[in-house]
Length: 143
Image 1 (cartoon, rainbow, N blue to C red):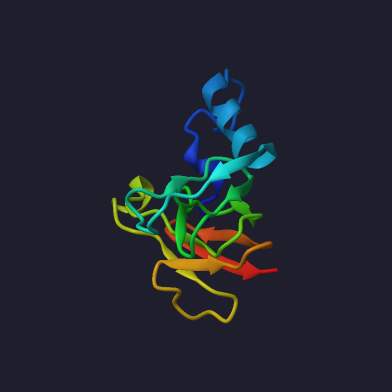
Image 2: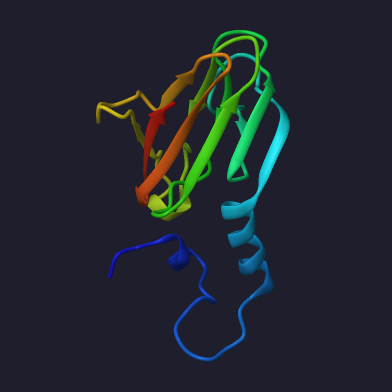
């Protein structure tokens, strides 16, 4: 059986039963939410990067090149849009400690399929769509 985002939530199993309200809220937040006014972490390092926790995330404050953000753990079926409305390029890191992937860093590849060194840079006034096809794997499509 293929792993999908639905497998991440243990109360979503076949049959008649109650579903955990926290699972329902998490699904909605991952697939229907947006946030604007985010501030990228100065310095560009992954451990301190601003976490992305919504389906659409708009960074309005990116003061210097490589100020950073970090994607949530990659789970197959998840898709995140990151918008950079700041003045400099935004560095977006893959999750560095995915609990669904043996607590190792997720991989992040660009549209050409080559390694992105764990991050991609989004130019000022640009955006990227990040899609996960499997646990631990993000693919970036620059738009």
